[in-house]
Length: 127
Image (cartoon, rainbow, N blue to C red; front, side, top):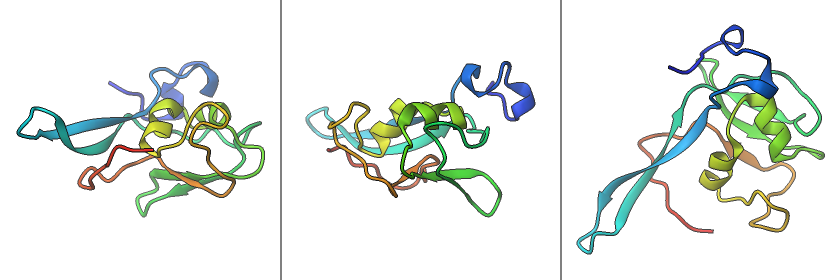
């Protein structure tokens, strides 16, 4: 069971476990046995522990007050965003098709990372 509130996370954002994550699921297989028709699903709940070094961008919420995305600003990095939101940024980077390492499928200041995928929307693998 994933913690659902800040009080349930022990030790603050830097030590929260398990991290919320995006799981990419295969919906079907083609006639040759290859994976086809993917979608992303949020496992767990990200929690905003507030701005910090490497994560001073905007946390975007839906009508129910749930975190749905994060918009980057100058100085942001994936490590900082992970610690701020208690969200696994490796799975987030994969889902949003950006690289973790500098120069690897780069992202730009002002990009918005989807953190809560629509499970009914198709996800297409690619760069």
